[in-house]
Image 1 (tube, rainbow, N blue to C red):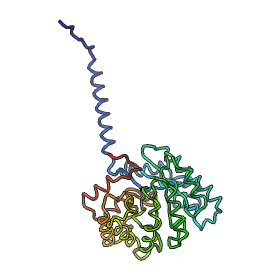
Image 2: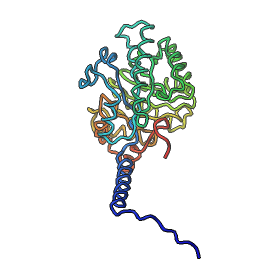
Image 3: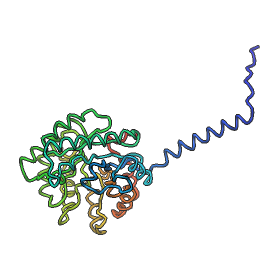
Amino acid sequence: MGRTLRLPRIPLFVLLLLLCICQVRVTRTGAASEASLWRADHHVHLASPELCRLVGECLESNHPPAVYAADAIRALDQARVAKGVVLSCAYLYGLPSLHRTPREVAELTRRENEFTAAQVAQFPGRLVGFFSVNPLQRSALAEIRHWRGSKQLVGLKLHFTASAVDIRNAAERRQVAKVVASTAHMPIVLHIDGGKFNADDAELFIREVLPAAKDSWVQIAHAGGGLPEEDGNHLKVLRVFADHIAHDDPATRHVLFDVSYVPGPEDSASTAAAFAEQMRRIGMKRFLFGSDFNVLTPQQEIDNLRKLGLTEEEWKTLQENCAPWACVAP
């Protein structure tokens, strides 16, 4: 006969304690998985105190005014957003109105990008960052080389309006295309619109600048818009992209759009419906949630998006969309 295995007797209070611990762990795990309705906010900004002294528009609750990673995390949590993509504002040091020398622009750009990297590093499970440059500055290519391979800043942000890029100037188009080409497989976020940028300018951009990205992912900020804009140009620009995508233009195969500030808070219901129409032509899978924090909080942008009149299925698609650099595919 085999020997009978005798297990040690465990007191009842210990069993009850273990059961409670297991229940707490299950509850916490479930809460973590159910807490987030949105996978990622793809358009978040931070700002150092140094930058805030120059450009303003920062959180006065910080002393001195600034925008930190902790501020972004609080805003993401309030809107039940899992992750945030932080786009450095270093390009703002290239604003012509600041009258900085090229050397000063290079030094200040590096410091702001370093500030962004340090802030993102505080929340490695929640935040991923992009560095930025003014593409017309001589230091732009060196800055891109410096950040290649970074774990915190994985992509490049360009802001045509703040950098005073004239897309109608052939030399400037070539320079921007050179900067875009130098990223070598990094994802790129491009703020192309603002002011008088119109449908013809969008055509120039798609034909002569966008191909330089090759197979890199390109996120068009604000779905091709960007305040201030004139004469309904935002919708016209988005329609140009829709036309190219509908014809399977190779240049647009890796193009995504974030919907930060879309539609504009002051846009009419008819304008919002027109945006939704172009989004459907392009395909809802190409659109990424973004808030433009701290201009709008994620929750404010979620409320704003309801003006688009999306179907329940479209809304769910937008909630679940996440760029390859922000989320691991489920």
